[in-house]
Image (cartoon, rainbow, N blue to C red; front, side, top):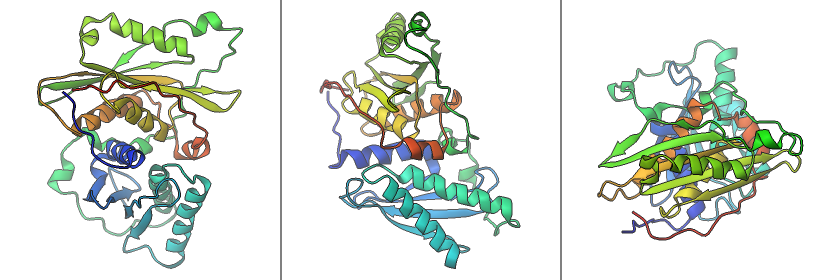
Length: 318
């Protein structure tokens, strides 16, 4: 049975879902219909000294021809400091017109807050965490706080190392997420050529449990050093639009030379849009765990150089 996928602007919806998966409780929906969102950004998630709230409204023309409408809210942000930060955000937009930029904006603001905390006296009193915020939650993993972990790219020469390239890469398995009898689990492998993608899939399908999953959604990104572009693709495996959303998450995080497969075992209860949240969370968690997330600076440099090749998607789904 098919589940509906609401929303008129696919690119905006994919970016919103990716941001929610990346930032968890820091990301807040103010008005879903009007596309108004707020994200709480701090210099240190565990011990914040400087905090700022970025409120954005996404016009229908974003990301194609118009920027998000934004507001910076912090009692300490005034005068030249506010103007400098606004100019930085607008420069990021101009450098990446037509691309999704919310992630780059958030991480630019976080960089400014980190620099401020290192250069100045302790920040304004930040109110103590509420009990709810103290509860451990997997969504609290903040990818951007991973200290400059360069992506583990595999440098290779195709002609000299062909036998090495075509070896089956190691496969890691993430912690499953279960919701209303549906279970989601991510699998990750480093890949440097499309043949390895097929080898990883074949190996996973040798496992009877994975082979019996309702859907095995996957996406991969391989960086072509000579052309400085990405070879990438995705597959829904019957979960309409799930592969594209997974690939979009990987694009925003600027991961390279890696594939992620998310298995879903359907439990008989339709989850609606929550299924995409679980797919993205599974993928994000394992990418963070294996240190595939890159710094915002690298994301900004490579955003816009991506090339997509998407297969025809099967439309029936659970």
